[in-house]
Length: 285
Image (cartoon, rainbow, N blue to C red; front, side):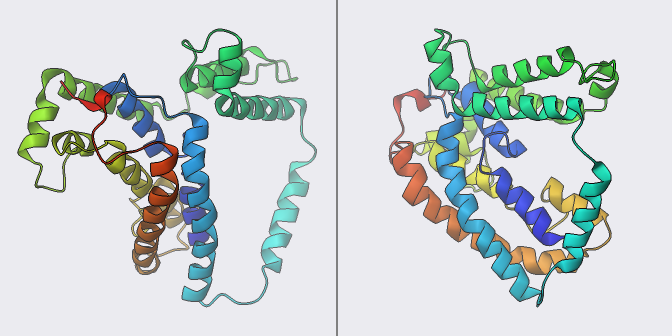
């Protein structure tokens, strides 16, 4: 259970839409630094995929050694096989959803290529691709006399999460526009718990030096059920206790810090052109 939760959190860091912190990072950059070069889907994967490829094997080795897991997982294979047989063959609606999902992923990855070739590069963003995919779900038939997605199903989406994230963008924009962000950054430059972007501006550093590690770190909160969504889900199953999660999670936190530091030095800094000084677009009002 812990392996599933940790793998979900780690795997989500590999793409911009994999975890909420990644999307918050992009939104904050666009809101606070509108003149900053866009961090594309591919840019993020160049950082996130190496992190995932290193962390997943380490996580597997660590958990199997920590909890003394030995032998094979034959019973798990049987359960998976039984569940797949119960699902039966894919229905037409399921195939169409899969096609939309694949097209959405490709649209994100190659957005710059196809948008530029169509002459709409300045109009297309990652959110545009997501909205187009959602529209297709409302338009295409499921093969059962209904659409792939109707409003009744759409109402079950946790819209509160979107409102919380959007509210964060609004607050960040308000802080920047009024000058409060700069004032706080200068006032609290010696304190650790403060808005990282404003602290970077106050210290004349590249904002990404602090914002990217913080974004990854939000998905590496392995100790408590409240740390990440996957942690809460597996704790709610009743199969994992808080002491078990804390015992493994504390050491996993330290491991992730070490791996993240290496990824920043070897991949993020050279690939994104992050320098030790503040770029011209990073000046807050």
